[in-house]
Amino acid sequence: MTRPAGSRPAALIVGIVQLSVLLALAGGAVWFFTSLDNPKRQVATTISDFRDLCAGRPIPGAAAYVPGSGTHPVAAFGSSQDEMGGIGNPVTFDSGADRAVYGPSDVSTVQLVACAERVEDGPVDGSCAFQGATAPLHRATVEITVYEARTGEQVGEPATVVAGDTRCPFIISYKGSPVVYTTPTPGQFQAVLAPLAGV
Image (cartoon, rainbow, N blue to C red; front, side, top):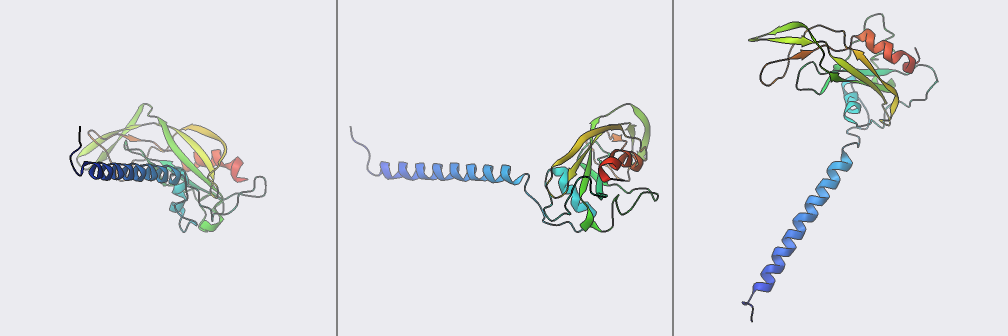
């Protein structure tokens, strides 16, 4: 039995191409999974930059956190108020809060980041009207987890609260019929954060 002329080089080329594609895919997968928790930025220039911590990315240039040594400024993020999920906006703390600790204007001092995640939808507790739609407002149960800004390491145990802020969001994202959720009040965040922030 004889082979047609030129079949071996063609098969070799196909094999090399297939191997190259497999190696490229494997390399891409390794890069993707190793970059998931790598820093997105070295330093934060706004409070919103600390949202990276809620996505598992530390900010290596953030202020160092040394437990038990004075106060520990913190940035906090509420959970999304719509059914699409995701990280919410930075928390604006009440005027009575110590602004050097809670959401400080000098972002270079932030040591801790608190992230809220909705864990239970809860019962309907009102409604929110939007242009062309009305959405039921569910009183959500939320888990607040605190991270060290520089390393991304969890600090303490997560705290679970029934979110008490019933204000309607300005805008929502949804598929089908809209649904909205309560978020923790600034006071609820402060109650969870005070022991860790050293206040």
